[in-house]
Each structure stands twice: as structure tokens, then as C-alpha cells.
Image 1 (tube, helix red, strand yellow):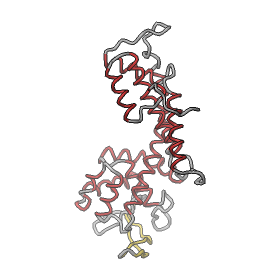
Image 2: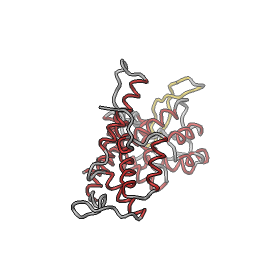
Image 3: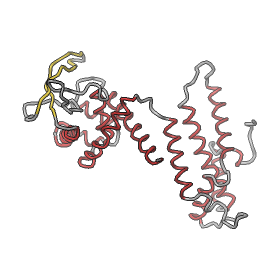
Image 4: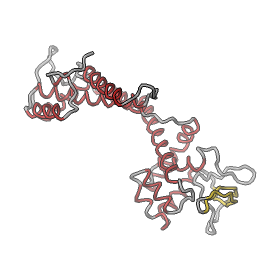
Length: 309
């Protein structure tokens, strides 16, 4: 397969400054040819990113990998992307149709009497394409989640979504923190006799707590040193109560006033919780943000699969 330079932009990917400038000049001409080429380039860029993400998900051998081989692979991926793009009935047809409508350019008629680039993809085909790309993107970047993590996220997401609607705290943040606090359900706090406490967030029972209590041995960090201590924790009648009590504390306690301002980023949210003294573990923010990210990816996979069914 030849990877040498080509005089035709249609045989190259507009990923360098010269090609991009040429593409801009063509697009500015507002001709059917320029619109088709622009659409093909958009599809090529999409395909290249898809191939790249799939390669990144593949474990490298480490024996022959080097900057030179990476460059060669990238060039090969560009060529693959170009060759897979611009096919009749593909994504570029849909893009061309949209561009032609926006620019007011009449596309030439195809052999079946329809304007080229219009109606090539039905709404059903487009939906299938969108779902396929979502599945491919997720598959390429899928987390190495355990069965316990997947089960835990699936079991508690619905309750967390209900509390999110009431409080504004993202469901993925709450489920991720609950997973981190309980070891994804392996170390949930138990009451005397083994009854569940439904306490997913390790919230302690202070002097003002009037509800049930569970006493367990926990790990506390004193001056960075881990120590075992017996502590009292709140106990509830359901997991919904646990989520609601956690959200109430975060949104109403002055101690966590700044936490609710950091819901735009998992890491910022976790750092804010640590600064507010939610936990004594010096690495709490890092661990929590990873748990939240795992939760988000698992929830995304569930949504994609649900759309596919």
C-alpha cells in the first residue's frame, strides 16, 4: 500500500495545515464538489479517531514499539480512514446533505433521481450508525471493571438518580463514592447481629444523631499513620435513606458548602470533599475520583446497551 504524497486532497486526510487550508478554500467556493470533499474529510477524521481509540485499547507488546513504529501506524491509520470514507450511503452523504441545505447549494441528481447526498441515510440507518459508533467508542475505552463493580453500580444507580433530581448532586458521584466507601459492596457496615446498616457513605453517628447506630472497627489516619479504632456509624432502613442523608449533609452542612460548587469535575469534587475533612486518608481524593470515573463508564455502557435493545 502506497503512503506517498498525493496531489489529490481526496486521497489524503486533511490533518496538516496545508491540506486544511486547501479544504477551507474549496469549502468557501460553495460548489457541490467542495461540499462532497468537505463531507468526506469529516468522515475520514471521524474514522481516524475511531481507529486510534481502538488501537489505544490494545495492549502493546513493548518489544518493537518505538516512535518510528508509532508514526508508521498513524500514517497507516490515516490511509485506512481515507479509504473507508466517501462510500455511497455512508456518513459523508449525510454530512453533504446537511451542508448543502445550510449553504443553499443544489446537489446534482443521482441515477435514481434523488439529489446526491440527500436521503442516502434513513432516520433508522442514522440511529443505527449513532448507536454503533457509541458502542465502538465505549468498547475501545472500556474500563477493566470487576463483576462486583458492575453489580454495585447497577444495583444503586436508580436510587442515586432519584436523589440527584432532588439535590443536584450527580448520581455517578454518589454511586462512585458509595462504591469506594464500601469496597463496591464487600465491606458494608453491619449492625450488631449482622443486620445491614444501609450506610453506604461511612457517615458517623455524632451527638446529634437520633437514629439507629452500628459500631464497627474502622481505619483512621492520624498524622498520616493508619490506626484501627471503634466508631459509631449511622444506620438506616434502606439504601434510599442512605443516599438522601448523604445528599442532605453535603448540601446543608456549612462544612461542605464549597463541595456543591464543584460538581462539574469528579476530581474537583473529590478534592473539595477531602479539603472539607470528609475522610482522613491523605489519598482519598485520588481514590474517590477514580471510583467515580469507573462508575461513569459503567453507567455509560448500561445506557448504550439499553439504547441498543
